[in-house]
Each structure stands twice: as structure tokens, then as C-alpha cells.
Amino acid sequence: MKNDQQVVSYIKEANTYVSPEVSSKVDKDLLPTTERISDRLSYFCMWLCGCVVIGTFTAGSSVFGVLNLTQSIVAMLLGNIGIAVALVLNGRAGHTYGIPMTVQLRTSFGIGGARIAGLIRAVPALIWFGFQSWVGGEALNLVLKTLFGFDNVIVCFVVFHVVQIILAMRGFSGIKWLENVGAVFIFITLLYMTYVTVTKYGTTISDSVVNIKGSWGLPFWGGVTVFLGLYTGIILNVSDLSRNFTKTGGDKTRFVIYLLAILPATLLMCSIGLIVAAATGTYDPIAIFSSTVDNKLLLVATMLFIIFSQITTNVLNNMVPPIYVAMDLTKWSFNKCAILIGVLAVCTCPWVLVTPESASGLALFIQIYSAFLGPIFAVMVVDYYVIRKRKLNLDEIYKKDGAFSGFNLAGLIATGVGALAAISVVEIGWFLSLLPAGIVYYILMTKTKLGTKYLFGTSRNS
Image (cartoon, rainbow, N blue to C red; front, top):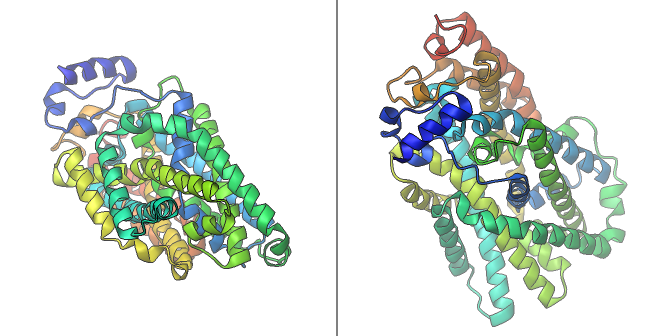
């Protein structure tokens, strides 16, 4: 039986397992994976494809008039290094034990509390899913209009959206080959777009981007938060991806992969968004590409790049996390929850988010939800490294009425404290939230009775 094979595998790999009695009551997609289908190259390709987020162009344009080019690049660098470190830290549990985020959250928030934390992660994923689906639909519409004269963005959006839902139903392995093949294409296209942008607008932006004074103060760190905030969601659910990475890849390997995949793509996309916004005042990503490409064939190729990149990014980063959360809440199958998430993403009205008037609002939205995701990240890291010393009892975590049932108030209170600290200065809220949330969680778990039940399996458990 498949569950028995998982038990045997995890006795060998992690000295812990999910017993047949417990695993038989859990959906197989939430159980620890024993199929490490991503080697170093495919994992790199997955992250390179996954970080090509159209919202990054908008994030780059959002710092126009606030930071100069040097400050913008430094902010991107710092944000990306922070992302890579955070991904390694929070992805270690998933890599070691093969568990998804919704299960990882249970030790620090309890089974009930994990659903609250999961919903906080799912909301921005839904919004980004809808946003990028609309952008992909616009790109598809432009391709069809250019080649065949067909012009109906609503139809293209619906078709593009449905295709993504179908791909999500095929699971992680279903799109692995797309990422491996597409990584080279995506990177070359980004290099080309940067070249075209600099060639076309390089002489017209010195006064508005290069030579402005900008700021190294709060606006600068606000920019760092925006660039880091693009990935604060995936930082939480990185275990959904690291659980598929080969067991032979350690922390240093994953850090290098994350940085090499995310940094170049982010630098190129943000620079394009910043330069074109300064030169044309255009914030819509599709309009950005349309204005920089004069050749019809190259325009079509660029739009196909956008279509392809949105599929790989959306399915992995913006569909899988809320699907797992929905599975935990509804007890529905993976496929049913994929359809549910697709419907909910449409309800976010993504056609409003891509308008020029929404660019600054989108940046503010990133900063606000980062204020809530930061504390959850801090709680998870303190719980795994400090409280549990990286040792998990999977059998107990999966038990519906086990030691981790209910709501861990220590985790929820610490998250609230961290969020309040973040909102006090929302521009750098993600950073401000970390220490208060982590310290409060540690104190509540070790010095009060709030977290006593959830100390199961630790040296502090009596």
C-alpha cells in the first residue's frame, strides 16, 4: 500500500513518519512527499520561471520619483538577499520532512490556528493569481489581435484562467518540463527587453531617474520592503516547493539557487518598469512591452513570453498555497479546491489592479500584507529552530485530536503584536514585525502556560 511505502521511506530518511492509522485519514496531497522530483538544475529553473512576476514591473515603476537608479538597484539587491536567506530558513522543514506549509504551521499555531495563518497567506496569493491571469489574458489578446485580428480580452482572460486551473490539477510534476525548457527562453527575453528599453529610453531618463537626489532614508527602506514584499508570500509557503527538492541539496545549495534565480530576473524586470514609467508614464505591463517593441514578430514573441511566464508563476506560487489551505478548510480534493481558487481569483477584479491609478495602491497593498506575513514567518522560524531544535513528530502533527489540535494562542498573539509593530511604519513594516513577533512568541511559549500543550516533543515538554 502507498501509505506503507511512505512510512518505510520516512523511517529511513527522517527517523519519523506518519503511521498508517493516521495517514489513512489524511488526503494524500497533504502527506509528506517521498518523490523528490527536482534536482539542482530543475529546482533552479523552477525558481527562475516562478519569480517572473508581472507585478515586479509595477513594483519597479512604483519607486519612480522616489529613488534614483542607484538607490533602486541597491534596494533590489538587499531585498533579494533577504528573500534568499528567508527562503532557506523557512524551507528547511519542508525539505527535511517533505511537508507542505499548511502542515508546517500546525506546530506554531495549532491545527485550528494554522488555518487562520493559511488564510492570511492565501488572500494575497488569490489577488496575485487574478492580477497575473488578467495580464496573461491581455497578452494572449494582443497576440491574437496582431496575428488574426481577434480582439476580446474577456474571452482571452477566461481561456487563460481555465488553462491554468487545468495545469494546476496535473500537480507539480505536470509543469516541471515547462519550467526546465522555459528558463533559458525567459532569461534571454528579459535580457533582450532590457536592451531595447535602455536603447530606446536611455537618453531621456537621466533627469527623472539617474540624476535625482532620491533618498537613503525611510523611502529607501520602503523600497527594499516593496521588493522583498513581492516574495513574502512564497517565503511562508516555500516548503510547498522545497519538499520536492533532492535530499542531497543542503542549505548553501538552496541559498545559491534562490539568489541566482531571483536576483537577475528581479533586477531586469524592476529596471524595465522604472525606466519605462519614467520615460512614458505608463504603468500597465502590457503597455510597457507594447511601447518598447516595434517589430511585429518580436512583439508576438514578447507576449508569448508573458503568457508562458504567468502560467509557470501562477500555478506554483499563487495557486498551490491557497489550494492547500482550501483543502485543509473544506476537506475537498485537490482538484475541487483548484476550481474553487480559480473562481475566487476572478472575484478579486484583477482588471482594476492593472490600471495606472492602481500602481501606487498595489505597492501599498504589498507593504500592508507583508506586515502580516512577516510576523507569521518569525513565529515559524523561532518555533522550528529555537523551540523544537529542528525536530518534528509528524505522526502527532497529523493527528486531528493530537497534541497540536486547537488554537495555539501564543502564535496568534505574537502575530498580532508583530502586525501592530509593522503597521506603525508600514513602509518598513515587514522588518519591524520580525523581532517583536519572534520575542513575544518565545516568551509566551516558554514563560507562560499558553503554549504548554504545544511543546510536545521538545525538551521543555513535561
